Every structure is written in C-alpha cells, then in structure tokens.
Length: 116
Length: 114
Image (tube, rainbow over all chains, first blue to last red; front, side, top):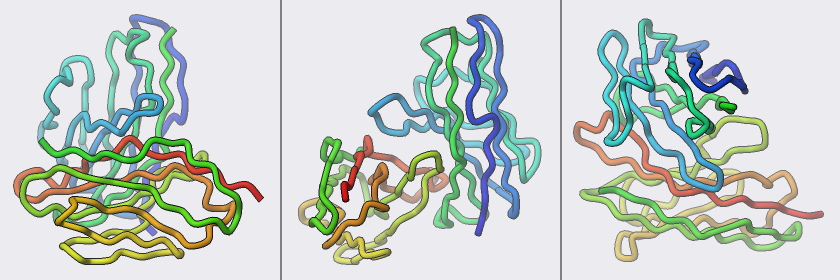
C-alpha cells in the first residue's frame, strides 16, 4: 500500500532555532500534501495545503513566514518551523494524496517537536 | 465553517463489549464522512467511509451509518478486542475548491482490557 514517511519522528530544539520536517511519499507521486498540527487531546488542525511546484495555501491564522512549506517534487514536502518558540511545541502530521480530491489520503507517523 | 464533534474520551471497555463512539458534524453541502484510526506509534489509517446519506461504511467489524437527518456518523462495533485499542478520529471532507482537505474531530482514545 501507499506509504508516507515522515522524518524525524521526534526532535528537540532550542528556542530561536529552525527545524525542518520532511514528508516523503515512498511508492507513489503525491500531487497534494497536507500539513496538520495536533495539540494534546485536541483535533488535527490543518495548517496548509501544498501542491507540487506551487506555493502552499495556508489556513487562516497560520503564519506562512513562520511555517515554511516547500513541495519541490512529487515525492517530498518539507515543513520548516522558523525561529521556534516553546508554544510551537506540538505534534505535526503530514498526509499525501495522488490524483483527485476524492482520492484516499495517506498519513505519515507524525513528528513530535519540543522547543526548549 | 465545517466542524466535527466527537464524544469525549477516553473510553475504557472490557474485551467483547459493545462500542459506540458518537460523531456529529456541521458542514455546507454534502460532505463525505470518514473514521480514521491511529494505533500507538503509527500514522492515521482510514478505517471506513461513507459518501452519501444512508450509506453504511464497514471494516474490521466496525460500522458507521451516514445519517443526514441527525448529521451524525457514529462508530459501532459489536465485540471489541484488545487490539482495537487506539485513537479514533471522525472526519469530513467537502468538495469544491478545498483540494479535498479533511476536517477532523478531536479524537477518542479507546482502551480495551482483556
């Protein structure tokens, strides 16, 4: 089946530094990737939608300059948390899809980010 | 905007007990409805789905019926197993220009004891 690999699975960084999270589709070409953020005991909140080769579409309230998304190829999207602060600590999950909006979504295992 | 509300957890059951996890939604148009499951240490997996009113999605003994009149999509299983312990997410997807993005409920933690 379709596999989405997310790396790293967890990361600890110091306040003020930047962290990059990778999301790869291993056995399919992902035309669209989604980035979600999950707070403890809360829902997955969509941060942005990215289509290969174009700029990401950010949800309302998500700072595009803080959460940089690059979808440079059909198998890789990256989320960079710039100048991270403790309030950015969260669980980040990517998902990928090939084809139409009705196609199934495949999820990565998530990345636990802790900013100290 | 679109939203999904799930019953609060955690839910703790004994093996072979009956499971219900409630899910209601608010959406414009006619959404597709989903249940996703997240086992410990793994990513979300699609459990079942229904794309129109009165459709019943089923998989691995789990069922959910798309009820338009009550805007609900409750998840049920007649006899749970320890291996069903996981976090369950109800979600909806609307069409149009939304690129098929999903709106999730907050998730319900299920623990099944032997």
